[in-house]
Amino acid sequence: MSESVVIVGAGQAAAQTVASLRAEGFAGAITVIGDEPYLPYQRPPLSKAYLAGELALDRLFIKPREFYDDAKCTLILDTTVTRIDRELHRVETHDNRSIAYDALVLATGSRVRHLTTNGEDLPGVRYLRGIADVEAMQSYLKPGVKLVIIGAGYIGLEVAAVAKKRGLTVTVLEMAPRVMARTVSEQLSAFYEAEHRKAGVVIHTGTRVDKIGVVDGTSFVVETSAGRVPADIVIAGVGILPNMELAEAAGLKVANGIVVDEFTRTSDPKIYAVGDCADLPCAHSVTNRARLESVQNAIDQAKHAAAAICGKPKPYTEVPWFWSDQYDLKLQIAGLSGPQDQLVLRGDPAARSFAVFRLRAAAIVAVEAVNAAPEYMMGRRLIAARAKVAPERLADRAVPMKEMGG
Image (cartoon, rainbow, N blue to C red; front, side, top):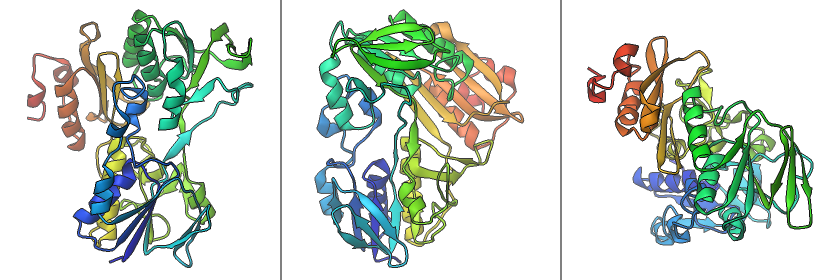
C-alpha cells in the first residue's frame, strides 16, 4: 500500500478522496494542493442559492477545517502545481516546493471556456466558475440592471432565473437552435424556453455574438446576428474545458480529458485522475467513453480511486446523473443521451411535472425529469438494470413507476 498520497486540486473530488482514503483504512500521509485560497467547496450552488444570496459562504464548504485536521490531511491552498516529475514521484509548485508521492490523484477539474468574440476581455464581461466570480457579480444584481447572458446551458439559465427574481432585465443569447441543446431533448428545451419567457426573460436562439463594445465606460452593447442588445453586465456561460495540461506535460495520455481506465488509473499506474478532468470508460455513452461534469461523478470516481490506491480496485460502472434548479422547477437527469434514441413522454408539460425517457435498442438509457421524483428515482434503477419497458406502458401515468421494474 502507498505511504503517501498527493491530491492535486481542491474541489469535490479531492474532499471525497480524502474521506474515502481514510474510510478504506489508508494510514499514510495525505496532502491536498489547491490553487484557490478556500477549503474544498461545492460549485453547483454558485449559480443558484449562493448567487441569489440564500446561502452563506461557510455552507459552500464540503467539510469544515476540522475534518482535514482530524484526517491528518495537509492542506496547501492558494498554490499551483507546475510540474509532475514521474521519475522521482514528486510534484513541484509555483513557489518552488517539491512534494513526494507514492500515489498521485489528479483532481484538477475544469475551467470556463472563454468567448472568442471581440470585446470578451472587457471588465464588464464575466464568467462564473468560482467564489470570487460570484462576489464580483453581486453589485450588479439589483433591479433595473441590464444583464446579457451568452449561452443557454445550465449555468446561463440558472443565472437568468436568479437574476429575474432579483429584478434585473435579462436577455439570453444562444447560438444553438434551442436552449440546453447539448444536454436535453427538444421537449425539455421547449418547456424551459417557455418558462423563462413567462418569467420575462428575452431569449434569442440561433443567434451569433459578433462583438461586445463599450458605450460610455460603464455600459455595453452586444452586437449579434439578431441586432444590438444593451447591457450593464455580460455573463458568458459557453461551456468548460478540462484542466489536463499538467498531465499532458508529464506525458500522460490525454484525449477529451486525462485518459483513465475503469479503476481511474491513468497511463502511469501511480497516477489517478478523477472528476471533470477525467476521460473514462462509460458503458452508458454511445461512444463507450465520456468526460462527466457532475458532482456525482466527482464523488463516485474519488471513491473508486481511493479503493484502488488501497489495493481494492473495482470497476467504475455508476449511472451518471445531473440536476438543475431554475425557478421552482427541479430538473433531474440520469443516464446519457444518444442522437438516435427513441423518446417517450410521460406526463403533461403543462402540468409542470413530467419526464422524457430515452430508449436505445428497446432499453431505457436515460431519463429527464421535471418535478417528477418517482420517474427520476425509478428511472435510475431501470437504466442501471438495462431494463426494457414497452413505450406505451412507460408513457402511461396510470401505471406507477414502482411497477415498471416488474
